[in-house]
Image 1: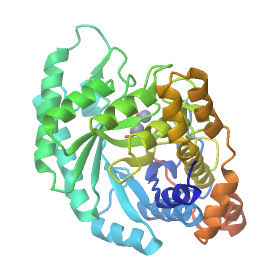
Image 2: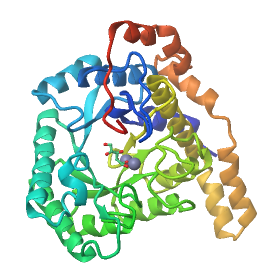
Image 3: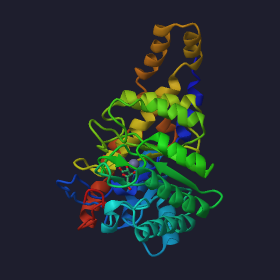
Image 4: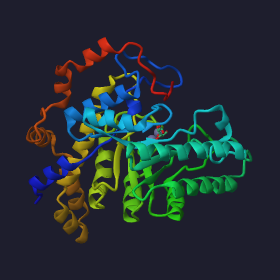
Length: 386
Ligand code: AOS
Ligand code: ZN
Ligand code: ZN
């Protein structure tokens, strides 16, 4: 039997980080659709993230992206966040946007470009010192488009060299999150294409290097929950970039395309004891056609719902069925939890937390959307897809 009180306690303690770039305008390489009221400054992105936290109660941090959120005074930015009711989360580096990086950043054949990229990564650690952020998230667009274009092994050596320089610069309580991605923008080889490559680098680096699983970064049909189980078992799952996808790295709202997959992932997280602070649950999404703040609120709720269902799995019954070889019984235990409507439970929890049971409606009623449209003229693009 599941202890509902304990389930609620766990849900109350859950933390989901929203990304600053989700609040700005975004689009595809074909078009960025400008929305009214989007933030013009990093401070306004933080205000929007704080709004998501105000209505959900479980999104108290916002991830920054450098240089999209570049400011002169990061300590002041951290103060701004604190005054708004949240804190600054992971620092996302960007070594994919400059002309210099056409042939790669830290794996570029040109040592001068490699140095420039490494300097940026080190600067991001300086920023973490000022903001109090624990995590540096590294995603490299590095790769090649044509067989023979560059030496695949040498690129791994260059990558290892840069990672180790960054690792050495980290403080005792800081971590490096290495994110992998199958393809895009490189189409033949990607230098960190999969969890195995990310894991191998992190293992060599040491305990402060852990893997970030972006749910949109796999080949179709990949069993992501298996990867989650293995990484957790090895103590190397550091974070999620949650989003959902129908085709490639679609960056749609988490739980929208495949809520069952999200449940299966959360089941492995619960099973592997991954709900603590050692795994950062972050969203990495772009709201190209839907309003952004409610898009984030909905996403946070989708993660909560999948988590609640995973927590409802009757672990004893599941183990008993598994051990006795009861295939259908074991599957039924899992499906019973998945098919439970957890919305009333979450509504109740929100009321207990002093929140509105319906965050989407509460946000709609608040007038915040109308206010930012009136106040913010000429919002900026997130940088992503711009
Ligand atoms: C890119 O595809 C990755 O998902 C990155 O995590 C992310 O979208 C980017 O770093 C935004 O900063
Ligand atoms: Zn990502
Ligand atoms: Zn991505």
